[in-house]
Image (cartoon, rainbow, N blue to C red):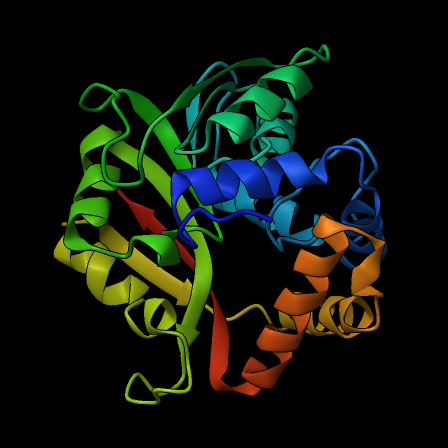
Amino acid sequence: MNAAPSGSAEYFDGWYANMVGSTRRDELKQRYLGLPAHLLSTSLLPWEGIADVVGALRLSPGCRLLDLACGRGGYGLEVARRAQARLVGVDFSREAVRQAADAARAPGVEAEFRVGELSATGLPDASVDALMCIDSIQFEATEATYRELRRVLAAGGRSVITSWEALDRSDESVPERLRLVDLRAGLEGAGFLDVEVREPKAWRAAERNLWLAAAELDPAEGPDVRSLHDEAIRTLEGFDRIRRVFAVVTAP
C-alpha cells in the first residue's frame, strides 16, 4: 500500500509503478476513449481529443512543444509525432518520467523528459513554441502555475489546457482542488490573449462510460485495479457536479 500523502510526487511514483504489469486500466481506456495500444495514457483525453489539441496548437514542423505534467508521455508523444514537433515533457513524478523516456525510444519523434513542477518547470523563459497541459492543472491551479505557463511560452505561442471545474464553486461536496479551478480567470490573470474555454460534451460522455465500467471491476485483482475501482466510485458520486473544460490561449 502506498503510504505517501495523496497528491505528492511520492504518491504518484507509486501510482505509476503500479501500472507496470497491469493491463486493465489501459484496456478500459483503449475501449472507452478509443486509444491505440501504444499510447500510454494517465488522463482522460479521448482519441478524438488529440486531434482537437493538435488543431488548437497550430504546430509547425520543428517547433518545440512542452507537455507539462506529461505523465507517461503518451499524449505528448502522439501530438509531437503528428505535428513533427520536438517534445519536452515535464512531470514531478520520477517514475512517470522514467516510463515516458522508455516510451520515447520508439522512432518517429524527438523527445526529452525531465522532472519539474507545474509552477516550476526549470525551463528558460520563452523557451517553448507551444504548450499542452492535459488533465493536471487542477493539482496546482495557482497564480504561480499560470504565470509559469506564460513565462516559458514564446510570444505568439499557443497553449491548450484541459481540466475539470465545479459547476458551483461553493458546493463543498466537490473536491476542493476542482472548486479552485477557474481556467478563464487564471489564464487571463496571467496575461494570455484570446482566452477560449469550451466544454467538449463527447469527451464527457466517454468518461462516464469508462467510470461505469471501472466501478464494476473486482478490487481484489491488484493494487492498480483497486485504485481504478475506488477512483471510479468517487468520481461517479460527483460526476454531475463538475464540467469538462478545454482552454486555448495565445501568449502576447
